[in-house]
Image: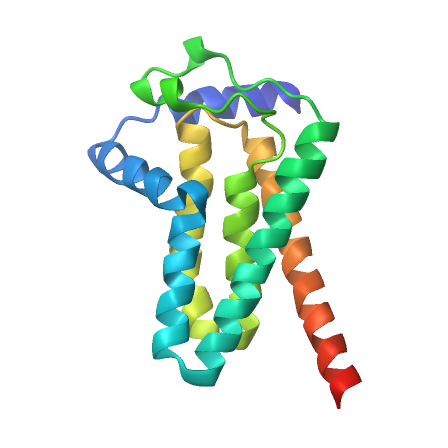
Length: 176
């Protein structure tokens, strides 16, 4: 499993296409500090009426919980070095964080947002799925993470979204 993870990391980091060189740095910048998800939530809240506000609130709540669990809990428990710089044949390797590689917090936040939004507003969730996938690809391409870090972040994000949905339903039942 580890060898496959390493081979896939090298392959994805070496992927050289014009659209990847143009698009992935933009995706990375947008996802930094969850700017992309805050912007999506603002658009949903402004344009989507009550459904949009509910979707935005669920998405932002899920992002907050996913980041807390990813960055303040799991990264502290699991110390994993980032992919070696010599595996990354482009300049993105210079911008990598110093924290543990496991799990990908960017992916956890992206998946949590999208998975929390989708039940409330499926079309918005479908639109969010595109940048979510691009964030996951970018994290490996930039050399910030191994594919298994991204998979773990996605799993964490899905779990958090399910937790947020369950907590929301429980709160509605207790009020009613």
